[in-house]
Length: 179
Image 1 (cartoon, one colour):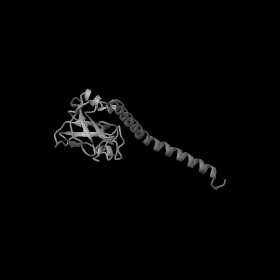
Image 2: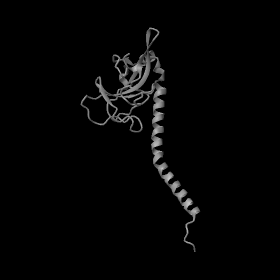
Image 3: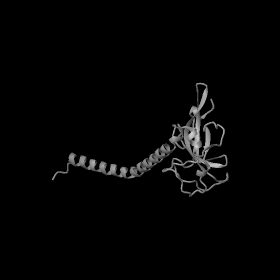
Image 4: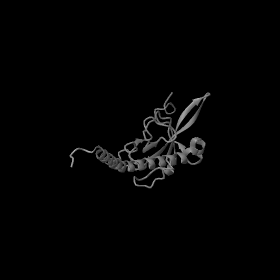
């Protein structure tokens, strides 16, 4: 019996090990991909439900009221108080955000509004330190809640790209900043 190494067996063993390793990585990647897929579906549903508000007049017809001046990095906030979250464990319909955020597009001597974000408002006092509603799949929105105007808010930039991320509080695009 020879004690020399058989290169075919070595290659087979290597390929089997590689296959098992790939399956192991896949087992960990699958849940992350599932969360990403769920998040993308949530964002798409918010975008679809709020796209009718590209015309601010439709938002006003549906109960949204201008509640802020132009805020650099955000824009104008139109709020529907019926959709403000009262408690951190409230059931929230993502397709009914409490606020719609509009930037401005200036051209031809007039200003038009550009829908940028849906915003979820949580009606708690400024000193609130408890948990915030977990609205979207994954951790992308964690820590993005910010306090302003008597509410905690979470922006979801679903109508315009935000270079800083979908849930970033501010947007550096020109429509959302002073010119």
